[in-house]
Length: 547
Image (tube, rainbow, N blue to C red; front, side):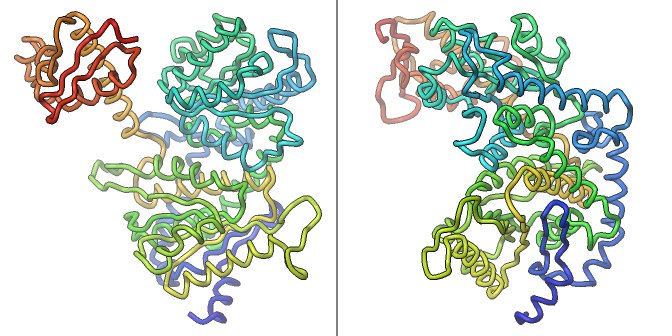
């Protein structure tokens, strides 16, 4: 296409919302009017499904749940008054609690104001808060300095806790887990609690929980209630982790940092209204879903590359990896047919990527489409000119436009989302835009976007590994007299009854080897490794003298 043709497509296929300062340009996806005609009924059905979802229909059939994250920014559309009241009450509770922390009405156990915020979670409980914190944070004006723990890595714990070693007495902890059984978050909580105890500080008087507020559904709620934590905020079973940023999960950390959560909710609500349009060409979420369908032929054949030209939006690709990939990466469709669906998401930021993988995007495999995110406002401070009448921000725009042009010249397609500025309103709109696009696309390909059976399978497998480790350490501890090879350990931990039921020791050998190697690398675990050449001859023993 010529540049003149591209501009005409831009004028036709760019949708704008001046109220929230967001526009989305689809002109550089090379779809045709014929494609739009063929998919008109499919997208209309998807929009009707979304309308029913918002009314409270069971939209997550595998878990028999409603899907209600849209109600979070507009309680008036919730299916009953009790849910609407809970949502409004929670937002008010978040704002009131944050205000009490900021004005010193709630103090730490030592009588000092809270200055630091330590947020613990995993997946949807942390990716949203991290993204929003990075997008809106200002080290000069933020009410609290925030830290995140989002893994079960002991070294990761130490890195964060060393930063807080002399500041735990002014640190507020927020633990986020719907059930309280999420291992990564539980481990982080226990590690941090132990560090508080080591410093003679009562962890409960520095802690807040966001969880299901039902004792038989949440171990975290039970712990917080029994120990007298400062506060507990609700998570509801009709909100999934990856769509929870506009619930207390995301609003509490944001409010504690001092961000305007009313504006964030407003941006999401206005975007929701915008994306309810029944006309696909004026509905940016419907168009996003259709473009994903077009580029990947309804099978996810092309990857989604997220390129925000703004440092503040650097974490958006990580946030979208969960929202998109956990929602759409499904083995079976709703009819039970094997489909292996999904869209792979990756990205960093511009112009960094122009010195990284843009080379492949332009000249290598054409197995992707790009989503550029442009931000018009450069900075709040006075401009600095690096050349005559040229700023660093001008160069950033130049790199974005140049890369976009270089890609289309080679037939590489892209979408551009333009934000007037990065602020709570536009961040809320970005979140809402992609939440709805994911839901609409899922309907186009007939999958359930709101469950995650693969994640649950991984959790189950991890639990089995931990159980195997306990059996290994029990066997070696009970037999300290000599080293045992991997083969001997696997044979020794399987009972005769298990063997009769089909459990084969040889099937355990590789995991035995990896578990013992990990234990032996941590000398305090008292498992010693004997060097060897081949796997089966690698020997391990219990060694009391190793400390």
